[in-house]
Every structure is written in structure tokens, then in C-alpha cells.
Picture (cartoon, each protein chain N blue to C red):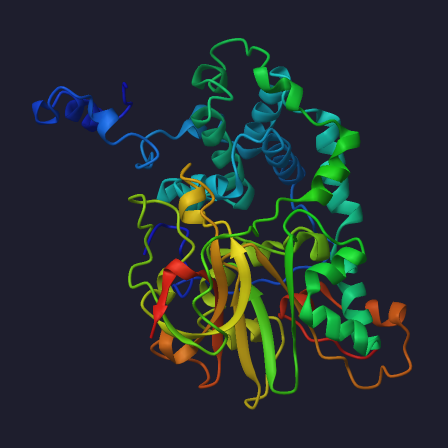
Length: 224
Length: 232
């Protein structure tokens, strides 16, 4: 178990409530929150792993109480100050904001379609050879914790920690979030889709043939 | 290095560190900051909070309000589940396209112009008579934006994230979908930067329909695995 965001398999949540396809933003400020976050991301002062980890570092009570876009706003505010883009005094409205050294990186409306269409791929060449093949039996790390940084970011959910599964697909090599979220480099390594039988994950699986597939990095896995 | 946390400040005076400031011994990045939450400096009302952040970043010359309008317009009007539905309809109509899609979906959707943010590596998974696929991101809300647009509220909800990996059939029932016992469920938890697109089963009775007509039948929820497609 790492942090409050790691909720897969948790008991106690209510029903899932479907909604129509044309409901895109439920409030006017939702679209604005999305756009401010993306536009601030265009400045290039953090990567996606840093931004995920920042949201995960919200106090558990805030994480549970905030709506989706409230989490985005809180994470953005925390990153802007942590990365020195905005001072705490500016954030608190105590001083008149000064024009940033990063202002040249601002993207205008005409540039937006190209930036969104470019994306930020995470697949990389890597020196680390793939040691598993589809069909191989593997076991996930026993603790769903970052081994480089205490309380750090990881993408192994608690529910799959220590579970036995089989490799179904090699995705190539990808940036390792556990490293990249903490300024320790991209450290790309092989990434696999790993299938776990529901009976390996849950005390009362719904069906004997059901499975959950997770994308897991090679260093999360060992041979079973 | 002055730390905002009083405990770490006290430790910084600790003679055991031999006069080396504690902050230098356990400096970032080998530590995570659970102490300072700058967002608490902003108004707590979310609409005001967004306004405050936007105007601050505009004053600092970092964002352009017209660029924000463009981003919102993109996801409200231009990028949405119609893109994914076009891919599904093509896969149903053209076996060669379907084979290439299952082999390398990223290349195939890129050719259709559906590459982009949160869709840089795409894998298509096909529903069959024996297997029903569903997609979730239990750790956040990863979703194939260039193919399906902004994720729906329920996809981002704690209830969906927590429950669908453990009880997918109960969750499906809440969408009005009852799966036969002979069908296995495979739930894909998007823990990396791979984005999954479910290719639902083509409904019987649509053999004479063309791609455009088929695409109109394909719902967003069916491409997440939370719906089935029915003939008109």
C-alpha cells in the first residue's frame, strides 16, 4: 500500500453512476481547470510522473474530499511553488506578481493543436534487455512501494503486490515512473502486460476465469 | 537549508550529524515533501481557486487565456468518442485493417489522425463470444483522450476505480449489462502509458451497414467495456 490514491479493490464505495456522452464538463470551472493545468504543463517544468506524484501527495483527507478537478488544481498549485515557477507570496496574493523568466515558453492559441497532437510519448530505447517472454510466470514485488525514495511514486497497485501472474505482452521499454517522478532520470526498462487471475487477487472472485491485467515494469517482477 | 517542518528543523540541529545540516544528508530527491501544501494558500472554493490560478499565471506571462479557450474547445467539440467509434467501425468492416489494429494500434490510429496527448501508445483489445474486456485506471484516471475525449465522471470516480477490478460484473450490471457465465472478463488496469481501446462485438443484423452507419451505433461506454453495442 503506498498512498491514498491506491484504491483498487477497496470495499465501501457506492454505485457507479453512468452519464450521457454529451456531458463533458459538469461545471464551467472544470474546463478551465483542465486548460490551466495543461497550459502550465506546456512550460516544461515537470513531467507526468511528477504531476501524478504531486496529486498523490495530497493529504488523504483532501484527496478523498476533493473532486477530480479540485485534485488537479491543488496539485498544480503545489507544483508551481515547489518548482519555483510561482512564489508562495504570489500564490497567497500577498505581493504583486512579477513576469516570469519562463514567459517565453508561453504557448498561444494557434500553437495549441500542434502541442496536443504531439503528446509526450514514454517509450524509449533501453540498455536493459527483456528477460521475460509472453507466457512466462512471474510474481509482482511483495511491497507496492518505491524502492528508490521512501513514500515515493510507484505504479504497482497494492492489490497486485506479491501476486502471481503471467506475461501476456511486451510493450517495449518505457520510462520508469519510480525514478522519473523524483528527478532521478528516466531509467527506461522493459514494460509488460501481466495477467493475474481474479482468484489470485481477491478472496471472493466473481468468476473463476476472470482476470485483471496490469502494465508492470521489469524491475517490479521476478520469475515465479 | 531551512525546512518548513519543525521536526526536520530540530533534526538539523542534531549533533549526531556532525554539524552537517540534516537537509544536506537527506536532501531531495531522496525524500518526498509531505509537509508543505501550497494549494492551501489559494481560496478553497474551487471556481474561485481556478480563477485565482488563471489570473496569477496570466499576470506572470505564463499562460494565454485564448490558449485556454482553444484547449476547452478542442475537448468539447473536436476530440471525442466519435474518433474511437470510427476506428471500431473500420475494424468491423475491414478484416485487414482489424488485423493491423490488433498488431500495432498506435500506428493505425495515427494514420487516421488520432495520435496525441494521452494516446501516445495505444493497444486495441477485442471482445469475443468468450471474452469481455474492460478498462480502468485504479491509480488515477488514465484514458485514451485522442480516441475517446475527456473521461466521463464515473470513470474518474472512486467507486469505479475501487470496484471494477474486484467486481467487474456487478459494475457492469449498474450499466445495465448482464454477461453470460460462459464469458470471462478481463479488466485492464492502465498503470503505465499504454492506453487501451475496447473493440466491442459487432451486433448481429448489421451486415449490410456501411462504416458511417456502424460508427453511429458505437457508444463511448462500449469502447471502455462498460456497454455493449446493439443493432438499431
